[in-house]
Amino acid sequence: MSLRNLLFGSNAKTGTVPRVERFEGLSLIFALLLVLSLAGTAAASLCVWRQPDADISGIFGSGSYKTVFADITDAQKQKVEERLGFPLDADETQFKYFPVFKGKQRVGTAMSHAGKGQFGAIEVVVAVVAGDSGPVIKEVRIQRDREKAKAALRSKDFLGQFKGKGLTDTFMVGEDIETAVKGAEKASQAVATAARKLLVVYDGLGRP
Amino acid sequence: MNFFRFALKNLFAHKTRTLLTLGSMTVAVAVLFTLVSFNRGYEKALKTQLQGMGIHMMVVPVGCPYEAASLILKGGKIPNYLPAGVLDQVQAIPEIDVAAPTFMSAIVRPEEGRTDIYIGVDSATLRLKNWWQLKGRFPEKPNEAMLGHDVTLIELSNIGDQIYMPEKDITFDVVGELEPTGNEDDGFFYIPLATAQAMFDQPDKLTGISIRLKNPDDAPVVSAKLATIKGAEVITMGELLGTMMTLMGSAKSLLLSIVMIIIIISALGVLNTVLMSVFERTKEIGVMRATGASQAHIFGLVWLETLMLSLLGGIGGLGLALVGARALESVVKRFLPLAPKGSVVALEPGSFLLIMAFVLGIAVVAGFYPALRAARAKPIEALRSE
Image 1 (spheres, rainbow over the protein chains, first blue to last red):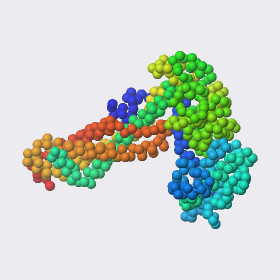
Image 2: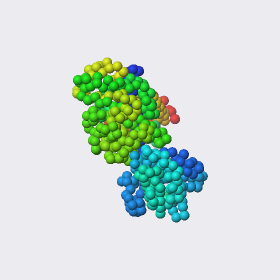
Image 3: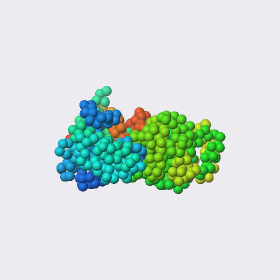
Image 4: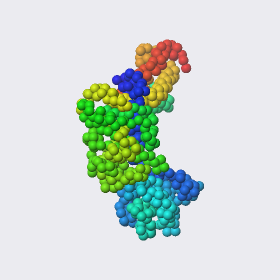
């Protein structure tokens, strides 16, 4: 085995360059592999914060953000689960927060989470600010969904209901939250539950 | 033994200079070893992945690969599809065990940072990929879907759930889940072939036919038969691997050229270090010659110093490569457009031995001049020098 062969692989031995006709024939396979490489990365980026700049300017007017990772201890997890009334997912051992700053002053915190809707995942971004008795929601946004009631779920009428909600609110659709539209109760509750979960976990982790 | 100790002592008489030279040689060898290991690993991983597809060859429409890839990734239509009759012609070839038709297309949602890739399949795919482990069942009715493992995680959807495709206003019942395959199959939505064709307005058209042969040795015969089909082109997995490696080759040539320059600079550094050492020890060499050391002894001593310096650099390079290769791999894979799953860096002893032989070869050349100059020094002149 020559060094050249070792470095360039067996094709280099002959020094051949593939003919144009050969390239043409590979169309779909290349397409497949290119698509595949993207598909693989998508799986690893489950519920990232997709459009931080747009969300920050939309919610806070302007500002910058940092990324904070917070591990949840067993004791914290137990308390959080008691408050939520349901267990965290098995892989939820670390949470990601985005403190938002205007200059040096922290003006709030953004978080993202995927909840199970009626027709797939619904990814929400929740912005919280300090309230008189704990953190309260400044705004909830939907960054990805595949719901039939997409427009209603993203409407100000629905999402506006979350503004000012705090830790003592129930976030129950049909009680203190109106459904986005008739027939979208499950999706509406998914958004509400995701918002409450982020709020409770944020508080449970000591508001990192 | 004394000869080695003497050479080592000479080398480390000027620690800073020797360590700097060693450092440059270490980095050069580490980069070369990592590059070679990456090449070997990439080829191996690609081969494994292609073999794992269980496909011996594919029939695809004629067209430009870059245009097709770009169009599909942007959710557009590719210019050419396989006509409906091709599948019958392929299935009529007796050497073919399974011919699985597929129709692939994508729905791109740039504002959501997500691309859904739909693959229209029929039961032949299940026979082709007979290692697949399914939960539930394969989609058969028009509105049924099976989800790849990654899709179940991304969409938080499982058997019994529904998946809505807003762009086409179609609701699918999830009837199956693919257990993790570790390859690209995990990232797709699988739907019935006819549904996919109708959904993307290409009834009876195909984007490819994957083929498994009864006997892989029949590939040339089958390939020749398939080549007669109008509008279709045949690609064997071996050809695909070769072309992909060649595509990578140009980038590797550039990298290798840079590494070679680094190695030559390092070799010049070694030459400089040893030559300076020879100049500084002129008097000492004169004493050695006056007390009975032959020219061969002096030549051997100086040459040995060069070889030891290069050998130590090589070993250091190996250590650095072992420590840094995995970290480098994770970075490289993010930017590699055709990155196969699994490790793409194969740290093999054979590669290291070959590189060490290469480095020592360079050291032999680099050490020749200082050794010759030292050996040729006349004792009387050397003793006079300050």
